[in-house]
Every structure is written in structure tokens, then in C-alpha cells.
Length: 212
Image (cartoon, rainbow, N blue to C red; front, side, top):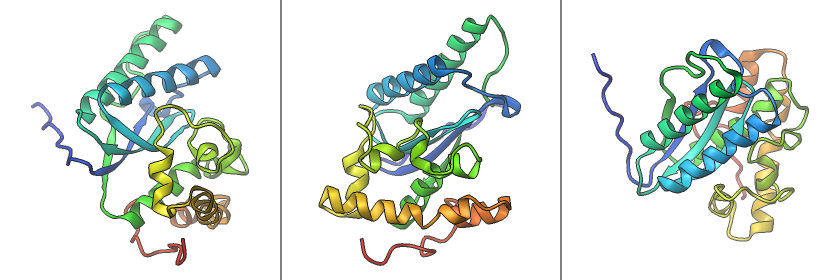
């Protein structure tokens, strides 16, 4: 039986995840990371998907997006399918690189948006890949903190507007909020890491900044 088509609320925010089949790596070198990011940029531009935060790990990718005028499902199909075919051809292999369907969750309020973004950008720390999130080059963290030029598809100004109207103060507010989750992200217990970084379905009032 065919799966029901997903519906996307206009201008709504979503957390998206796509993973390697059986948790296999989806990128193996710098060229593949660049190609995946290039295809993300192309799909976002073509289907008017606004990317507020992202993180490309070895086995999966997180996106925090806002729905524009296009079809998110088509954008994801083009991104995931196109990259998988390119990589399979490069390695002269067949088979599914990704799991059959990407995961999506509606972000219902500003508080949930903040904790979702922090969860996404702390992923490299929680995975033990880096000690600090800004040391991972393949996420939006450096751009949000003003330490790197944002890729063309990243809506940095829109994201920082949730932390204030002044860009410099907004960056500082976000950095403080991000750092508040670091100790938990570095914890040895996976349960503690997830609780501290705040998964998207954790109540939005937990550990929110009181002054942005």
C-alpha cells in the first residue's frame, strides 16, 4: 500500500532528519561533504525551502527549515535521491544509501525552535566528534556565531532575529544559550546528553533564556 503524501503547513517550521541505511556513512571525504551541501543549496533554492540551521554528520543530516512556496517533499527527494545516485556512481555500487523515508517533526513555537537549533548544532559534541560545536565545519554553528561566512542557502539573519533585532547582541545571546547545553552534550550517558541538549519534543519552557 502506498504511503500517504505528507502535507506541509505554509510558513511552518520543521525539523528534518535523513539517515544512512543501517546507519552507514553517507559521506566519506571532503568532496562528498561539499557535494551534499551543494545539492542542499540547489534544492533549497529551487523549492524555496528556507534553511535556518543544519548539521551534516557522517551518518545523518539534520535540517531546521521553514516552508516557503515550494514542495518540501520534492526538495528532499531531489536532494536525497540525487546525492545517493551520484555517490553510488562514484563508488560503482548499487543499493540504498539512505533509509527509505526522511523524518520530520513540526516545530510548534519559538521555544521549540531554539532548543531544536541547539540540539542540531550540538550533535558533533554529543557524538564525540568535536569538543566544541563551532569546531565542526559542516554545520550552521560557525555562521550563527559570526565566525564564518554563511553558505548562500542559510537564512542566518532570520534565525538570529529570534534572539533580538541587533545582530551582534543576537549572536551573543545565541552563543550563551548554545553553551548552556555543552556540559550535557559532553556527558557519557546518552540519556543525559539527549535530555540536556533538549530533543524537539521536550517541553519548550525547559532551560530557555530569560533575557535575549
